Length: 181
Image (cartoon, rainbow, N blue to C red; front, side, top):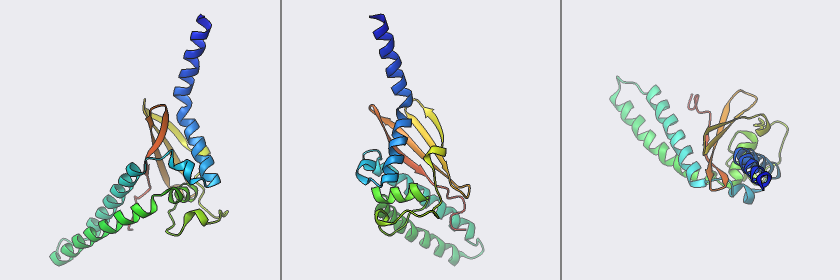
């Protein structure tokens, strides 16, 4: 009886520790097979959309601030108006592109293409973001990250959070340091 109890604890602990790795392997399989339905079960789309909107809006605001001229009040007003318009544009773009097929394209090539990503053939010239080469780490008991690096050295970070016994992607952090440059 004691052996069964110890074995049960070991199996549960192993699943608890290894389950985000299994989720990432399943994500890679979904991306490779371009299975949007299965991928959709592993992604919290509202959370990912909000995260990407925030990232793009901050990057655009920073680019606007960097390019605005403090001596020209009309230029600053135009930059502020442009930033407000761009924010609306970004929100619509992210809502339209953060779909299962859009995420498959993003995670397989490192770029979001505005065309129908599910119908695009895989080519050898894509910047491969290999999940197998990712830096994986726990950021807390219920938070796990996978940092993917493409051939150019740009990093994309997937944040997974525990939902019950499974894990879902809740955030995708893109390399937007040189956005608008």
